[in-house]
Length: 238
Ligand SMILES: *Cc1c(COP(=O)(O)O)cnc(C)c1O
Image: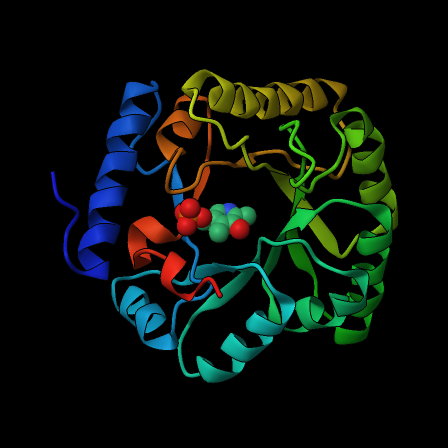
């Protein structure tokens, strides 16, 4: 089946697919949130998605979140940081983002905490875990997750930890991809059993345009979708 020709149409089709997948996984329709990823696409495309009812958008660079917050200040849009964040850019995120899903180290958490105190704000946060063997992927070593969550619970009260995020391995074998998602869910379940006070682990952000069906089957509560909504990014990759 061809993809619908408009952004609104593609959003509607993906939401419908997410409901179907949720039901197939024994969950309720509406239980999987769609996070549109607007990185590299222009403001006009984001405005179309806003008109279709989207309010949260994923971006992977601090400077792009700052720019969007300014150019789309007349809209209800909120900005979610999903990319690797350098510690010296914590200020931009503390000031302009509503959430970070790429929290992966203590130094960054402390920098955000300090900046959030100055801004008088707090930030929703997901911890990015490395479930893939690829060296190019960022994220916390799973072995370090429990210590890191305990650290966040006591040292960075302005980061409201709500769950975990991962990117699966880039592999043509769906079993290899699915294993990454399963790993994140199992880690989450193990952490819940430890019961870390002040840390909620309700949310699992996993799944992108190419692999979200597998992610929902493994318990994703939120999929981050760019190209399947906004189109091919390759033309402006340079
Ligand atoms: C770009 C990006 C996505 C979306 O990727 P698509 O393949 O375009 O859906 C999701 N998550 C992260 C962390 C990204 O950087």
